[in-house]
Image (cartoon, rainbow, N blue to C red; front, side, top):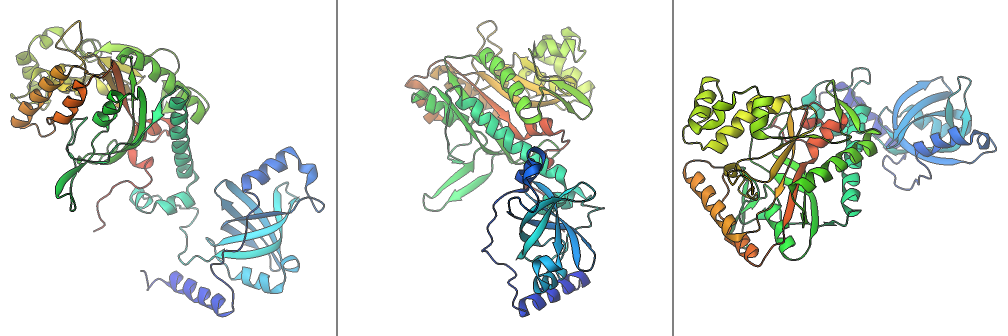
Length: 492
C-alpha cells in the first residue's frame, strides 16, 4: 500500500469525512432501469418522447470527468455499454446531496434518476433529479490524457486498462462474441458441446511439455492437459459422432507474443468425415465468424489485408518448400541433404532427428513466415503426426493439414487413426523418440488403444487456437492483448 502517497492520503481522509457525516460509502439499494446504450438508442429513434414530459430513467456508472460551475456541474460517466453526460444542479438534487457530490472524485460510482434533455450544444444529457453515491473509490485513476502506456502495467492491472482504454474493452467484447459465434456455428450443425478432464493421468493429444501436479487423496501424479484430443475421440467411440469443446490447454513452454502457457482452444471431431471435409468447414467457419465479429470477411491485420472469403490455397509441405520457400527440390531427396542444408543455414537440427522433423523445421523457417493469406499446408510426415491417419497415396505422409494465416499457425486438423494396431505402433515410435531425448514426444496410452479396439468410425478432428484467431480479428500484435490476465514474471 502506498501510505506515503499524498493523493491516497487525501482520498482516505475525504472518505472518512463522508462516513463520519453518515453518508454510506458502499450502499446496495439503488436499482438501474436502463443502460447507457438504451438511452442513446432512444435519443436517436424517438427524441420527441424525451424532455420534461418524458420518461424518467435510473442509470449508474463510474464518473470519468467533472466540469463544475459552482451550483451546478456537468459530469461524464460510463457503464458497460457506453458513456453519457449528466447535469447535476443544486436546486434539483438538494443542498445536502449537492454538498456530498462536491466531495466526490473521478472514479467513484454514482447512480442517478432523471430525464433526458438536449443541451444548447446539441448533446443529449441526463438531468439528475436524484443523485446517489454507490461506491467510493480510494485510489485515483491514471490521468486520462496519458492513460496507461506501459504494456506491463496494462497486463498486470488489466482492470485499469479496461477502465481507461476503450480499445482494450473492444478487444474483449469481440473475443466474447467470437466464442459465442463459434459455439452457435457448431450447435447449428448438430455438434454437441462436452467437457473433458483438465487433470489427466497421462499427457496426450499433442507434442508438448506438460505441467505436473499431485493428487493427495488418490496418491498419484496428474498432468494439466496439453490437449483434450484423446478424450474427445473416446466419446466418438462411445457414439457421440459430432462433439466439440471450447476450453483451456496448458503447456510448460516459453512466453512470447504468440505463446501463453495457458491458452484457449476449440477442438471438434466429426464421424464419417475426412480432413478435406474439415478444410471446407473451416473456410465456412472463419468467413462466418469474421462477418459476425467485424462486419466483413475481409480484415486488416498489422497492415496486411486478409481475405477470409472464398476458397483458400491448399499446398503440400514439400511443394511449399519449393514454391514458397525457394528450396531446390533435390535438397528434399534425403535426410542427409536436408540436414546439411539446415546446418549450413543456421537452422537448428541435430543428427539424431528423423527426416520428418528436419522437414518441418525447414518449413517453419523458410515457409511459415510467408503465409499471409489463409493457407492449408497438407502432407505432413508420419514421424511428426502420431495421431494422424496415413495417406493411402504415400504411406510416409498423413491426411493432415495445418492452417496458417499472417505467418502463424492457427489450426491443426487431420483424419484420425482408427486402426488400433497402427495407433499402437505409432505410440511405440514416439516412445522411441522420447528415449532418444525428445521430451515432447507422445507417450504410450494403452487405455486409448483399448478404446480403439472397440471400434471408432472414420473420423476427422481439428483444433483451433482461439487466442490467435482473436488476435487476427482485433488486429492485435501480441497474444497478451487478447488474454485478460496473461502470465507474467513476478515483479522484482
